Image (cartoon, rainbow, N blue to C red):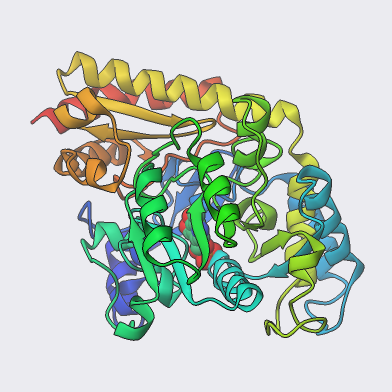
Length: 436
Ligand code: PLP
């Protein structure tokens, strides 16, 4: 048996920062990350043998909970037939069709391995189709580590307090216009200033990487109206929200629950569609998607794209994600969110729990309590320093929260009443720690 700090020491000698993805390193909350050896349902177990209630959920994929029996069986069955062929398989078609059944505008689907590849390809496709160079993104939205999309990105870029990333050339950065989220006037103005030059607006369907910052009523529809008027594409990044905020993602939620009526040009998906394995996708109308190679001039490829074992996990996950799963995830999300408010209120900490369907996160401070967070500037005005003590008090009590205040808390269908009660019991001590 090793301790987590022994594991981390060893890792730091071979992996930069001891991790393969920055937020895992606990830099913004301090301490040694937990090295996980196994996970089941709502729990993860670290290398020292300690079990935690998990609210990281692999950063989104674990909608059903970890190691769901149907997903594990599908992976084992697929693996028994070989790991990778470099040739098409019917499993890829099955997964793409399953996506299309849930998101009707996804007439064509290209499977890739990461959300980053999906957004990178969507941007290239938008440029290829429009013959224009500029891209609009919103401050605080994270679309993966694509060079052109790292400017003022949320998620790990936010925890490192970076304006972007070193290594992105000024020429690349200059082709991205970064605008404040939820501000249609800024979008109109950018299109007026750069008439005929903007290829696409890329937006998180409902931002979840600067804390949860839901789009104002009409914002996404407004983006659709403006992009269409100017001949630019609207790329709707549902890597995180897709098949998590509901069976047809945030797009479906906005349409069915909030009464919105719009269709983006391109969707990007990831996380849930891989069920814990590396699968992501971009999707949209045939007219646009068929511009991808081999039919069209926009090149994209991948040795492991549509990997047979990975797509088996994704398909099994989507098939298991019935309405009952979404109802459970929503109920768990509301119960935990309300309990957080109760505990923080009892400890006298001004805060706000912000929500987008099943997703929620906690914002600390007077600014959040009074105004809420509508964009990245609001999020950065929060009392982010309160999260570290809160996080560690939860961890000590066996509850593993995302190690960053900017991330959503991921509940799953496996977070049943007993699990939720464990979270609720831990909250008062964490709220007191955050108050200190
Ligand atoms: N887009 C969004 C909205 C995301 O949240 C993420 C990852 O968190 C990505 C894209 C990038 O996905 P990946 O980490 O699989 O490259």
